[in-house]
Length: 353
Image (cartoon, rainbow, N blue to C red; front, top):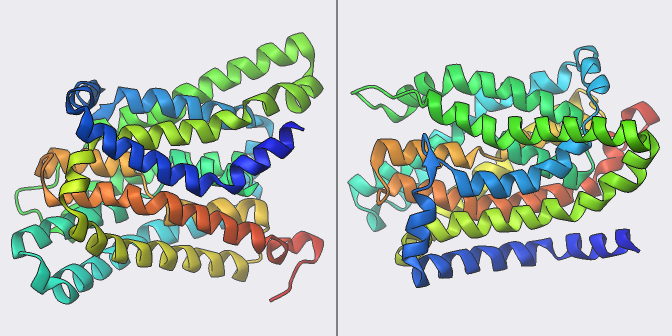
């Protein structure tokens, strides 16, 4: 019975996502004082309220991780290789090119030069921050390998630490130097990944010792499944509450920014999609490999945009629009992967075209 209810909720998740976005934007305008108070509660530009609801979302996913399976990743490195190539050799450059073509050329007559430059900068920041925590959510919804996705996230965080700043300086062209937000990256990883992971590990051990592993997997963990989706909705309410006024004050420009971001997301997804298919990577690892590049580490992008350009900047708006675009688009990509699942069961002979 519980599985049926969860399936119904999942089926209409895009509706709940849209409602959460609208609710957050309305709250940000109706209760600006509350939004400002919650928005100022942060460490190194990492929102504590967002971290709390993300903990609510990530904990059930982390409960599913079995560390004895993680050591097997070294035997199957191809999905990780695809992820790194797409994230760092392709995605930042396609984002820079697509944003420049649309914002500076196609939409140039509608946007002032200075504001257009800020929009491009914000979009490049999104392209420089491939997904970390949220890829676990998309992998979970698609029924992929959470253990492998966690390894991809961990290695991706290391690449962000070393490549985010120099590539940002190259692509954005900040002549005064592109600051490395080490503290923002560090606390983001701590709050969004490390804390829920540690709590999940402790919980798994305690429940296994007292009730056994069968009870853990068949009874205990399934009880937390709905929490992931509720946590996702609460996260969206908060993010859009913080940026509600900015969103409502710029309806046309939001559409102008959203279009190239959507094109970029689908482009990167299909580059990863055809790469994992070409290398005959099974579905469990193919799913996170396609999601991690298509999705963005939007918390980091927003934080860096605020540091470099300010709260009311075009760059900050562009990163927020990235959140607006990402969730419904990523849900559609999850649906695509689930529909094409049999094409990636290579170890079982699934080689249809």
